Image (tube, rainbow, N blue to C red):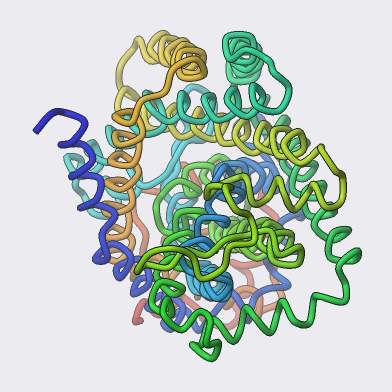
Length: 506
């Protein structure tokens, strides 16, 4: 067995049915014990998205949302959705929607925990699973393993994979050589990340809404053009999802499996990535950014992934493979699974421009993912070397490595690199899901504290002692500097009504 085969085998073990079950079970578990905040607190998600400002150490709530969404929205939103339809049929889309709804609770927990146990390193907020694993579970070895997994997946293999997809799509659409595209992407990437977390946040704040809204608008136009087919399209999605369509009856199980897999891979809820962006935000209470990040799962899957699915299905530009051989549906003879479905759907609106539109969309999707990778890598390098006096030098060296890997990956890709990236992300996800389950009590306490203060008519502020959370000393300085008035209001009500702390039972 060579190294490539070994990495492929390890990757398949990490991304097995057991992993999918763990993701689903975790989402269901938190949805139930939190009483479905993804429904109850939807208004709060929107309000907290735009209700907080940045500071000299932290980015705004919206910028934290944009950075995390930039990581969630990527190549999978185009190619991944097409893959789900190819192997699972139209019914896979319904299961993607359901998983996004369920997974939002996991995104809340991990992001709220990341905020509660964030730290100031190098003048900027940093946080994420490594931080709350050490502080919440008192296990630095566990935390170090997670930090190393992030460094492998997001620092050494992930950038090259994203850059390769950009360069390859530009070569196919515009005939531009990968070395030219790679140089441009690497230089732009260097310009943004060497400006620090603030510059990354400002770029994401502009680019992420622009790319998401633009992509969704194109899908809406295609739907309007094909409006007569829309009722039949939705009927096809639901009938296929519940094994009520004779054509797709043979792949009913595949519809569920591929819908679940692509949704989990795309929205990343519970896998620890979005939590690292969430920790960089300046908010008065951790639950606020938790709710914002739960909403980012909706945007990724219910909006962007759905935009791809509806473009493909409303134009009938897709194939569905038969597990026994051949095709159940073959509307595009000779077109392989992947971005080709989306390209052909766009061609119905703009003949000959499908590949160009997809290439531009891939650039924005992949580049914002690159920026998120930089945030994730830096956060974990900061964790590992936070007590090292040469941390700033080490951080600069890591940024140089990120840029070099981006350029190198754009001109050369390998199956081993993909396998290593999948291993890193898979290991991250396993470790983080286990961690947030073990940290259920403080996670639930954060939401209870937030809701209790809302019921008292207050703008919630985080006093860690009320939630029984230790080692969150940075919050004393944050509250004193930015939210002292809110803290005084809370203390006055506590004294008046004799409220000491929330109940920690779950």
